[in-house]
Structure formats: structure tokens, C-alpha cells
Amino acid sequence: MSKSTGLCVLAFSGGLDTSFCIPFIREKYGYDVATAMVDTGGFSADDFKRAEDRARKLGVVSHVVLDGKQQVFDGYVRWMIAGNVLRGGVYPLCVAAERVVQASLVAQYAVEKKAASVAHGSTGAGNDQIRFDVAMNVLAPGLKMLAPVREHSLSRAQETEYLAKHGLEIPPKTTAYSINAGMWGITIGGKETHDSASAVPDEIFEMAARSDPNVKPRLLKVRFDKGVPVALDGAKLKPVDIIENLNTLGCTYALGRGIHLGDTIVGIKGRVAFVAPAALMLINAHRELEKLVLTKWQRFWKDHVADFYGTMLHEGQPFDPSLRDIEALFQSSQERVSGEVSLTLRYGRFDIAGVSSPHSLMNAASGKYGEEFSLWSGQDAAGFGKILSIPSRLYGGAGASR
Image (cartoon, rainbow, N blue to C red; front, top):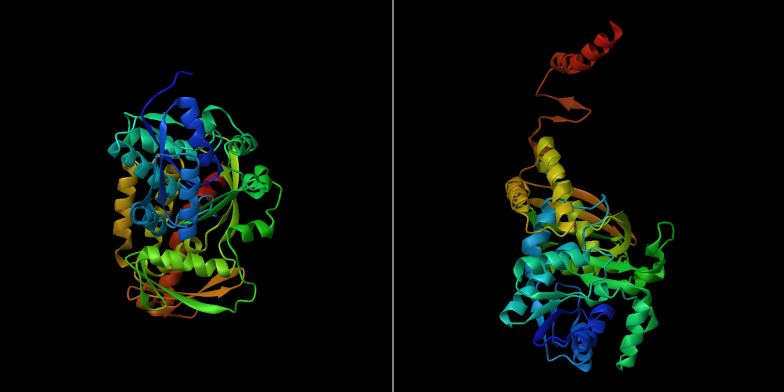
């Protein structure tokens, strides 16, 4: 392959794939490599330090950390809460929004640095390659895009061996599992997730997020203002801080653990384990509040468009204008979604204990379900039931006459 010259900006996480890309891009393509790590949550100060040390050890010309947490919330997470978005009814799309923001910020940074190329470490089998490709093609169309792991169909074992030759030893547990941490949750891939029948061992969840089996049950209160989380136990906080606090607390209680099996962007089935306590607590709390303050048809249409919204985001299409239209619907629907939700936390599970709102449609009703009524009479109810049965009666009668 002919050698290129210039600068390549690599979207860097500090993991195996992106670490491999540093010396490989330099040797195979001839570029100087600058690494850009995007903070979308889930990283500690030690994580950032280790990642920078690794990048510099592997020979980068520069390394930068870009803050993307607020952009993840403002651009996507707030709408996933508003839409109660769970892919397959299970998975809170821990990775999709973060990858879009990571790719977007790295692409913008590469343009600012007047780089010749931009790169990512995705393989050819997963969803991330498409998310990075789409964002980088939209935001940095003039740059050559590299994905060395995908282009050369490399295995994790081959990458590990290559890095060892360049003086970087990767622990075996790192090559067995791929763990990605972010604001909206942690995903775990490897071994048991490669088939549909194997159970993911508890120790793998513990490796990703430590819990304390001795924690005592407790009550937690989350306040929403127009669909946005604004307070925990009465203390006003920024939404990003609420999410981080709930993740820390939820991991201690072993909450938000699950396994999702579904369709990938490239058409194959995929399976992933995840730990997403903040996402699942907030979505479930928000949904319960909506049940109290929205009409059934508001929730019906929200659920339908939310499923499409989640699909488009999952499949790497965050820039499609239809998503802006759906966000406008979400914005309108959240006008009355204000109130407080109580959750009971126990080790391994949480439950909605109660919900209150100044816009409660339950308080507005003059009656108690199954007991009392004052907005209608018994005769009114009987007539309503009779009228409601007419379409089915007519259909049944038409079939019997033939």
C-alpha cells in the first residue's frame, strides 16, 4: 500500500481496538496520529490518565479530551427519556447516542486541526462502524476515513499480539470481553453474548459495575419538570449530575442489569449485556408520571413514534430530519409532565412506589375506579356499554347471515 502523509485524528477510547490503531495507522498508512477521546460519561480521572499514557506510549503526536456529556443529554438522552425509548422493550440504547456525539466531536476536531484523515476502531460486524461512518461522512466529508480493524478483518487476538510487539501488553480479561462505559449505561460483549443461549455470569456484571449485597432498602424521589429530571430527594441538580448519581447508586444496588438480543444495522442478530441503572430508573419513573398526566391517545402516539425514533438512532441515522419532527412532538407532549416519582430500591430490583403531579388526571376525576362515580349515572354507563358493543355485534351478525 502506498504511504500517505499528514495528520490522522483517531477517535480514541483507550481500549484494545483503538490502541491497536495508533501504531498500525502510522506504519500501514504513513500518517501521524493524534488521538481525541470524548468524555460521554462513565470515565474516571484515572481512566483518562491511563488512556493518555497509553496513547503517548504508542507514539501519538497529540492527545485531547473533548467534553461531550452535555451534548449527549441535550441532543439525545432527554428525548429518549421523553419517549421512554427502550429497544425491544428492554435495552435503553446505552451506546447509540454516545457514539454519535463521539463521532461528531472527533470529526469537528479533525476539521479544526486541518487533518487529512479521521479514523475509528470499529470492527466490520457491529453497529458502531455505521454510526461513526455516518457522522463522519456528514460532518467531515472532505477527510479520508479509516477503519483499520474493519478493513483488515482483524481479530482481538491478532490485535493483542501486534500491540505486544510494540511494547504494550494487554491483560487477557481485556481481550475476552469488550466493556464500554458511558453516561446512559455500560455495555458488555464477549464470550456468552456470542450465542443466544449462554447466561452472562454475575462476575462479569460485577467486573463492569461493583455492587454491595448488604445494602438496605431505601426510598428515592425523582422530580421531573416538563419531562426533564431536575431533582433527587428534593435536591435540585443538573440532569447530567442526576444521571451520574443514579448510576453510582444503582450500581451499588445491582440495578439496571440485563441482556438484549435484537437486530443489528447490518442485518444480523446481536446480543449484548448491559448495566444501565439510571436509564431504567428514569425511564420507568417518567413513564409512570406520564400515565398520570397524559391521555391514553397522547401516550399511544408517543409510543409509536418513540419506537421509530429509537430505531433511527440505533441504526445510525441521527441527522435525519424526521427525528427533529418527532422531537417537536415530544416537546409538546411534555408540557404537563411535571411531578415527583417515588422509587423503592432493593438489592437487585426497584419498584415505583408512588407518583404525584399538579396536573394529575386521577385527582381531576370525580370518582374512584371500581368503587364510586359521579360524572355519569348507572343508566349512562349501561348505554355506553351497549353503544360500544355495536360494531362487534354488526360484524358478528353479518357473518351469521351468509
